Image (cartoon, rainbow over all chains, first blue to last red; front, side, top):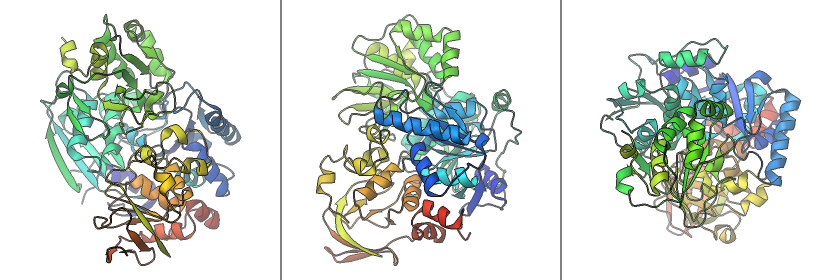
Length: 418
Length: 167
């Protein structure tokens, strides 16, 4: 009997013939924490009697969620991380470097076939490169810092086949929202989602990250896409690590296989306050918005900013809307600067923030007011997510957010695309 | 271990932002401070009504969303006795065992807000004293019981000098 990508990666990393349902103790290739989870992990590391991390070159801590620090409490937690990083010689990405889930792949820390854990639920993003990556809590992170290992239940896999090509005006975010709507917020709980089919095969690297990033919004432990030639070249340009791409066997066993024809997909929007309350953007066309946000580990990459700029070029953001843009990393920001994308966004009226998580999680930099409506490229629209439980958050693609910023209402972006 | 307390009923898909909002958790490691804000965006009066040992009872997918361990820790510090849910999101379930918060997975459809419950963690039963119904819970896997019985993952690693899961 053949194996899924998850079974293969967990077999090689545990030294067992790992099958869905088995519990394995596996070696991790890289571990990551951010500023909301690392401070507790450092505390747990001390509680465990930890003295040295297992391999400083395989550990990164990223200051991205509340960066630069908005208050003294956060500032002190950031200092704790900096002190720990210096003491242990681990990699520290300080303020302004970017969002952890952009930095870890962009700086070559993860390659196809890797096993990566991160103390952040969207660690599943690296499945876009064909790695098995998943989120853990701070104490699990601390245990991995000491031992270089983590325990994992080998997940069952769900094969999600997307037939056809995505039509113009729709993107991997629309696909991710559509799938979340169809499969629900718990539809893939504990599972590894293997995304495949023509529509997925044609996705570029940035778009693959977007799709895998949202796997956790369906409850999944991991989202994985078999790497394309473009992915392999992208990784070789960034990493010196040797790697062996992993593909599923023809006769691999899946707990579930779902097929979707996406050739007629239209722009999708998730309504407040659940990611799986999804409908067509055109069905919400009367909804007035006050803030539009483009950024995050889901959609703050260069491809996303290009799409937004193509729509905003020569246009002006509606006078009752604030357009906030947070590039996912300094490299993304520099790319946007070089290509003239940044100039277009600024001239249209955007406020550009420090590379990082921006206002996604309500820590700083764009908390909405009572009764305000936000349309965002983020991955979560929970009540209070952006720091105010009296605000409403809609989720959409960068194109839909850019189009909505121009009109002041939720807008299907296709009317701005020739 | 037998726990007794009242039920506070919640629905499906209770996410970790509701358990403890991001605007608080990035500021402090003081879990007693975070405990004052548990479930605040969903039910602003929750913490004031909560009595030590009370249970949170929910539907499916409890604890979905972020990896924040502050969620189970803030519940422990607000003196919640256990979380009883029809199902859990994997990150929350794992974090709860790692930090020592009892989590019980069982059919919760017969439990209403305010019901008096008796939870036997060893036998895996939830006895609804108000309605006279007993339901069986799915047991923790053996290796997770080891972590829980050691007092959480930090204590487990300290005690054994690494993982000792008996796999």
